[in-house]
Image (cartoon, rainbow, N blue to C red; front, top):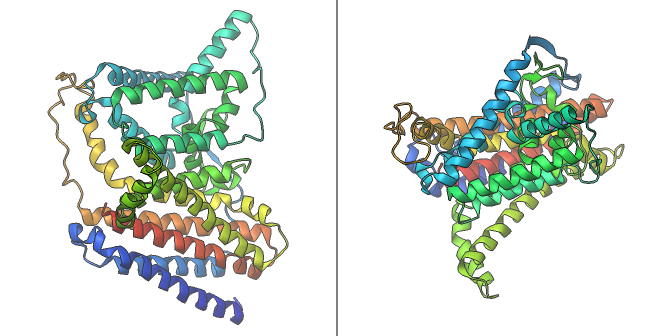
Length: 475
């Protein structure tokens, strides 16, 4: 690294550390510190996180001189027999049927009904973690994918020929339908006031199932699932971070971690989808923080003046907050791209936007894991008694209905350490992906390093903001 580059990096480092110090410190009074009795203060966590990112950047710049992640070379581990694949399909359909049955026929109480905990904890929080560890497990269990394949098989059996999709999926739509699906679910989870009503969740599940099956029959199972199924796209996206991958022949393969995401096709709506994952989680934390709680009532009263009822005004207020967070995440990334473009005009801003979009994927997972880790650890234990009494009517099918959640299984301090580690690890991974891609785009390694100063700023900004959200929420 040249002397001029080192001076620039030192200046940038100082500014980033000041930002990292300022954000979480402002929220310290609201956060986890009082409850967790942390051995070190929140501001020190922030300094440490920023320093780790800067040190990682320097190490990447000096030691990582050739691309390492652009090719996802896979080593075949094991082949799954066809009966095992269909067993996964049966299990997925069975769980979906149980969700619907418990939602419609069970007790309409949040904590007593199987469907609510399964959807919001196991499905929405647990599956992303499993996807990063074991690969795209949802593809093997997706009930709407299984149903669409089964219907196509029946049509083929009747006609004696393989049915072709009657329509071609519009390329201009890309992943926009999937992004809309994730925003819709996040709106349901975070804003809709009847979100915990089991029958409502079951009815919405039926509606989503019907739309997905119809779309797969019209446009093709794999094509529609890979573009328009919000959950399928989400879990597949995170599975690209995994060291395990499922090959087209159904076998399991081993690959270098993170290498799967470098081949992510960037089409219409792909960046918006990734920003949606980060933005909705950001809003979940932000809406529970002190700034939002202080200003939300005034904004709600202002909206109520247009004649909306209390429920509608609350939901609209929170909807505006979510839109703000989505736009904020997109704006931060765009600023980073503008900075990268200022280093060299070799590539247009649109080309750079697409080239580095995949670097946000580990950040999306980091935000999800950091924000929902405590929920997953604690509330997932409820499945032990819910599986014995899914309807909440006093049954004890497996003898575990009397099980109680152990909130002492992990301390608040340990949760905070995991959250910080998730944020730092996710952003270091993002830095590594960005640096690796820069080495491909720029022939001169020095130019590649200079182009990443702004991406370092983006990563530190995301990390500091994530820590601020965690400390202000106190989770």
